[in-house]
Length: 405
Image (tube, rainbow, N blue to C red):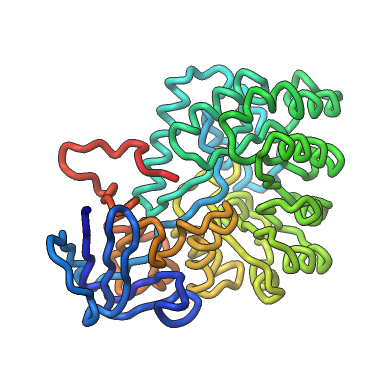
């Protein structure tokens, strides 16, 4: 049995209210005991249980919190859309049609090129404290390219999502129903073995409620869990459709009515907010404060993609949520850890309760509040997955895709 004791922790976020104070289960002057990749104990340093043969790590008066759980990301793609970003900053509004640019580049790329970009982004996310990441397809939009996107993604994380219904590809222009039929049949058959989830972009310029229902219902029959891009570009049926179908999450949610918020707050569907997208498109921010006040479960995610939110940094999203969405630092950290785990319907991650997987982050600050208080500063000093330090990598060891998920 391998054991690791972290000592000298100024403040420890456990997300276990039975272990510490408040919803974050905060413990001051704390220690954390890890055995065989799981949390064995947490508590005040003065109460560390007797044990022999421990490897010890001195946190040096710094804070420790659960690894970030990024429950919405698009990491399998090729190409660059920086010119589109420049145009938006000059006043051009965002529309879903820009996805076609990435589809063309992705189809033309080799597996090796797509895999190398995926590995780079996963390593980047890990270095900024993400220990579990969800990865969608959606930039292939053909049977071959969606299948290989998910096959590559599965090598990086078990949290893979089939998003064949991202937009209608150019070759199906004017025949969206025909494309939906393809997604819900032959494309789904090819992709389901590599996916845990299925998603649809239900919004202006993408797919309507009936089309989304057809795709999600087919995915459910294949045993896939449901997710939904909803209400990003304007008011629409997506949020309530997600609740109706029992989706694990409805994501974006920039434009919500009172009825939408009521539906989300009375359901098990997690409201996943992606403030990086609003930042990068100069859009209205989603109503995070209203959702929380209504009792909805809220998650934060990066929505990392080349068009509308090209960031893998969850700390940046925490800072945005505090500044622009009305979340407190505590609420934002919970949403970026336990909220993301809830959106993936996982209880073994996003927290440091006894028995959970020992995924945690050491930050070069005395408190998790500094993640919002010092935006843009690289505070992550160490990352552990399953009790094993993966960042910074030990001398002679690669910092590849191991451990994500």
